[in-house]
Length: 435
Ligand code: ARG
Image 1 (cartoon, rainbow, N blue to C red):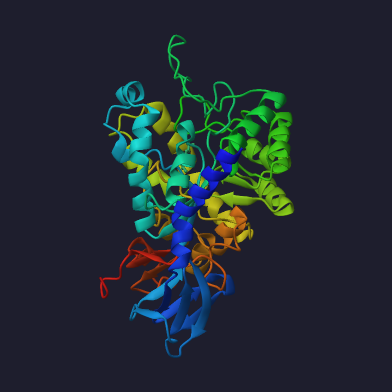
Image 2: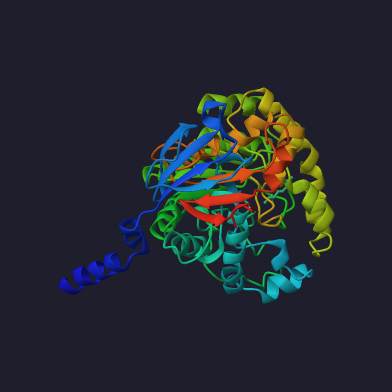
């Protein structure tokens, strides 16, 4: 017991967090404008005062107070650090060889773990200071999250799901479509029946999950026939959500199909991912339950233009053709219906660091630029339950900020080229005028 206390004391003494607090920096960040999405307002000539990793105060103009180091971003526009609520940092098309079957048979989760830090760095450098990792092999996301939190690797704050839960033969089952004599070994989220599902939720929590992800329906990039059929019974979904919520974890359901979306909402999930075939009743149910709808509407372009080259089976490309257009039309309907919507790209399906390409799609399909920015800041933070930590530039929150050179309220695509990134008061991408 005494040894344990000694060990704890040692760990605390060596922790970079505490060392950092001792020599806290005071920074004053100024720019031409600050977009404050949570107030739907633009602040002219902002002066953001930062103590250590947190924001102390946001002033409108005025002189830099004594003791504060000044970083002036000139004509740039500041925004809160961006949030993507659906990524997979342990996969990226650039990690693939072009031979789908060869990759499946030769790459292991260790390869994924080696490459994941690159994905994390690209994500952060693109201005995404927080992400929700919705499914990862072998708890890679937990190890990555912890290494980033300890300051050992550059990367965004990660809300980790660990293994995605799903039915035998479903979207989370890697064995589907292969000979029965081939099995992909390793930690698995494949689980059936209410009791076993409850146990699996507890296991994920035990291993470090911040959120629980499950496959309510079939999917595109997997070998089951359907693209949207329900893959759990209502009873199974109810048990999953009940158990996750008991442990204080939110639930994200992958669902393309009309019925599966409604079943997930009725079960009480916090967000539905993809939402491709959502109908009027689904939109109404989501409103009644306060469910977030996360549409990954950039994916279709990338999958259709690139996935043939990666050797992905034609059957999967055919499934993509079934969802792509309808998903975008339903995104527009959801915007019109006033649904709660957060920015979710499923990056990993397309290259990490390209996350912001989805903003232009969201505006093309019915959001105002401000709504698209709110989806990736204010609303994403609400969905994560972390609005007191991230998603806004206001006192007490982490000093996570990005800057762009054009006005994103008139030119949303400028978010694809952030000129400055700060995470927790540390400059990650310096502004070109102040390298
Ligand atoms: N991970 C998702 C799936 O395999 C990707 C769907 C992408 N397609 C789209 N149109 N959003 O089902």
